[in-house]
Image 1 (tube, rainbow, N blue to C red):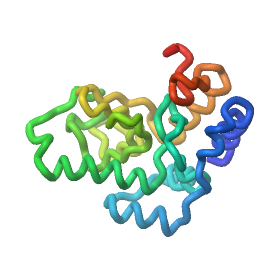
Image 2: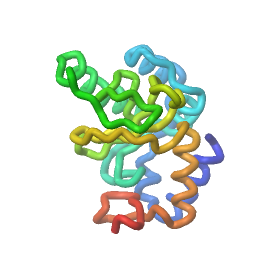
Image 3: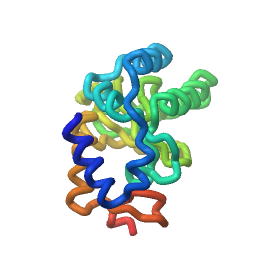
Image 4: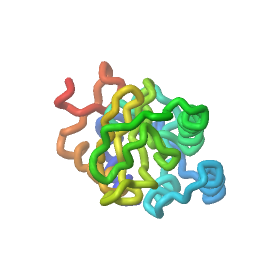
Length: 187
């Protein structure tokens, strides 16, 4: 994780220093365990390692990941609670998603942990309860108002590594109008 974050930080320093300034210092083991207890989960080692380096963004002035906020542990807990309250309230009863193979067909699952937020209820989630053929810890895309559930990476490490490579290759660029770092093809 150190190497991947060093690549991301280097790119940010050269291309979007205002975003580098939004990355929070790492979380403590106590903070990580507290969030795990509330969510009733245990993060994979690579997620824990990443959050010990940077505890998400401190502000959502600009999105770090394709215009999305990288959630801090506190923000993960807040966003997860919103979805959990909807689930417990029966809002998703009878609702199914159109999920990629390897993802459960739930509309939302309490073991889908939001990692990013786009400001409109959509997330990249850490999937700790995959469907048959999926990988525990895969990253899925979850839109609040669309049924598609797509696997974007087989692991947190792969997801973050793909992002670092995308920055270095020019796939992602900083855009004021795009509210942060966005896919260059989207402009």
